[in-house]
Amino acid sequence: MRSGLLVAGVVLAACAHRDADRPAREPPQEFVAGPPRWESRSEVQQGYATWYGARLAGRRTASGEVFDPRRMTAAHRSLPFGTWVEVTCLDTGRQVRVRITDRGPFGHPDRIIDVSRAAADQLGIRSRGVARVGLRVVGGPYGGP
Image (cartoon, rainbow, N blue to C red; front, top):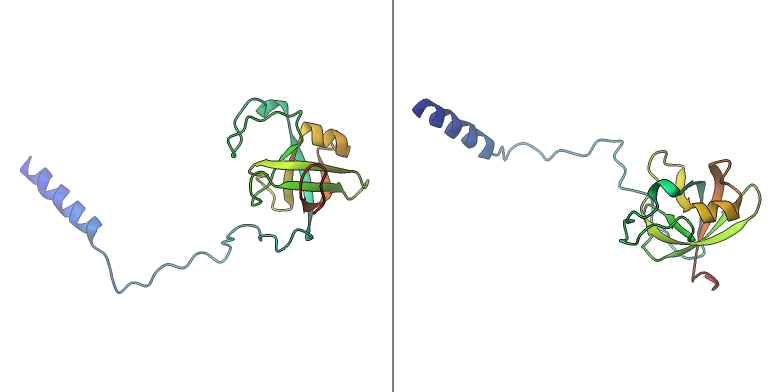
C-alpha cells in the first residue's frame, strides 16, 4: 500500500511539472480558423449548397429552434443565427430567401450552405442533392440588403 502511494505521488508530481524553457507549440500549418467573415451585406459568397430534410425534422438546431423541413431555413458555418440570406442557384438562376438557424454544412469546404427541403424544392435542387450557388445577406424574407 505504501509503495502504491509513493508511485501515485511521483506520477502526480511529474504531471504538475512545467518546463518553462520549452517554447509554446505552434498550430500545425494546415490549421484553419474557419471560413472568412463577410465584410459587407453586398458581398456574394459562392460555393455549393446541399439540403437536409425529414431525417432531422423535430430535432433542435444549433440556434435552439426545432427544425421543420417545410420552413425556409438553412445552416451556415459562420453567419449569425437569424440572418436572412438570398440563395441563387447559379445553374438555373432560381432564388430563395432563407433564415440561418443551424450550423453546417460539415464535410467538404466548398459546401457553404445546407438548405431545408422546402428551399431545395424552390431552388430545384432536391433531386440533384447539390448545386452551385451564390449567397448574399439580405434584410429579411421580402426586404432588400
